[in-house]
Image (cartoon, rainbow, N blue to C red):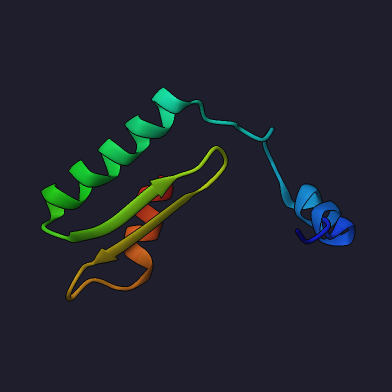
Length: 76
């Protein structure tokens, strides 16, 4: 295990504009479902999605789409 990087945690906390949100199991499943539906509607290929308590990992193929667009839309 690696110990926490206190200066990095402090710097990240200063950038936050809202309180941290911790997702429960039902909320995490809903986020994964919505991302899958979003990809299906846009005809993007969702290779993998894993919603954690405080962030999401998604691997998506979206040919012809600027690389930032899926991330921006998922965050919205």
